[in-house]
Length: 166
Image (cartoon, rainbow, N blue to C red; front, top):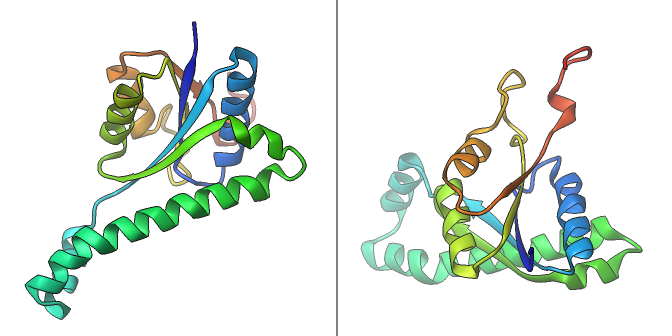
């Protein structure tokens, strides 16, 4: 029985398409829908630039307070983006129980959120917006299929397939 679903989004070009699948599944199963977006940690270059311009106290403050503010802002923008995309179907957005933006390695973040929430199904796209066209699965999707304890509903990015491919 599917009572709760976690939709993992990269907020890329195909995110609305994958969202439609997640909403359809939530509607059919009358399931709660959760959304997670993983933000990659700052790279070494960004960290060194911040260290150059900020003292240790300001850097610590940015890491604690600033990062939380940025994540909350992204969560709000994700919800606003969903509202814009849905247009007349605003009532479907009521199925979304929560939107979380979490910093970390995307497959790890998604699996941790799935475990915390105790979801019964993950919904993800097969590729990120920047994935190579000749790759059968994106890195995150492949890791989720390999490591998830719950079923993974994989939405194929058909635009990646060449004509005539089976």
